[in-house]
Length: 374
Image (cartoon, rainbow, N blue to C red; front, top):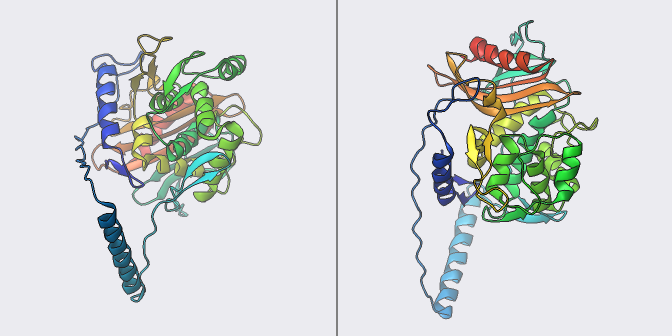
């Protein structure tokens, strides 16, 4: 996996994060009901080398002028051959939020006439299994039916947050105005406390692993000044990705009749997130411990809900590498995951929405990898 994304170098970030994850992981201790997912291979990151050189103003002006002329000549010569000139990534302010133009190529899935049906013993209302190399659905059920996403919403929250975080060295201070309403709503939380100073990295892991609504709201306030403005960024991202049947009303996944998606659209959201190295790292992590704070001197141990209920190796011929779960009464049990076939290395995304209960959802996902992840 490259350390570069949208022109940003994350090498140092990943080295620092890797050291913390290595301390947090417990290689010999499996989940309560399972063994830990297979360890991911980690490539060593190379540090960049930077030098500071003092340049006289006059010399600097000449160098800059020469550079401008060279670029102009290059552009004219290439345009003369009918070739376009790549444009640099731009940043702009949008509704009070720092918005990075992370435009990506739209993902479109092919659902051929011979796409297989989801087996009848899986009671989900919407589902899709996609081969990410061919972008072809190998099996589906009501892939375009609008359903409530519950906390799979947080995949889009993560993606938009990573698009817009200016510095991972930034922090956010948790408040009772965030935590109290979430406890009243019985929302899942990471467990951050009033007055706790939290890093952006810890908020991302708190958002995904335990599905922390406290982390979600904190990110919206840090990035755009509040959830209302952040939701605008989420819907703008959905439009950018070409999602025709998705709309967000909040960043937490709490029920709102105006918040919906489809199995097809959620698969695109997950695949897009996997193209971002930081998002992929978070989505694929089983255990993580937050930084030590006054409120949590040992940090907060976090575990991914996905791997609390499965090993990830149950399909035997495939390995489930990561993803996000979700549940509210109105949505039923939802899972968006990705994994690979152990022999071919082919990668698949499996999305199931509105299963009747937890175990049909988890066993259903395992069976779909067994049957369709070739």
